[in-house]
Image (cartoon, rainbow, N blue to C red):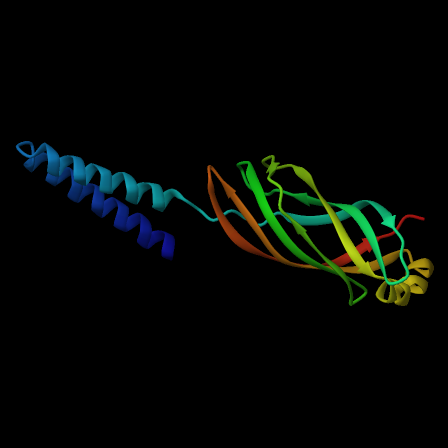
Length: 177
């Protein structure tokens, strides 16, 4: 419905613009201003918010540092870009929970180029509370599947224009032992 209104407004503006251009051959400055306004309106009307990349899995899970209170783990989060154009990931602030227990947060502050209609990986490194990890340890060892939740925000964009988008994923992850 909103798309119809935008298209109607653009078509009406183009018709109005054509009439003004015909009548303003004596005022090139006015014609230039109207042309600039039309180009700006067209650019904004053609912009569409990108679809958020789809979380698929985590891979390459490693424990970098083991401590009594805190450990450092890293993994590659696998995503799929459903958009027909490449994107750039500028920042990500994510909270990760396994089996409904928070295991940590991560911040990515590196520019990653995301190919169109393809999978890509986001490397994450986070400090994990050992108590939370140990409370999940028995469940993790005895099952071949876990519940994973990833929540937060990502800053996505293209051509230098970036927007913050929410990330809310909940699903099952198969474990390979």
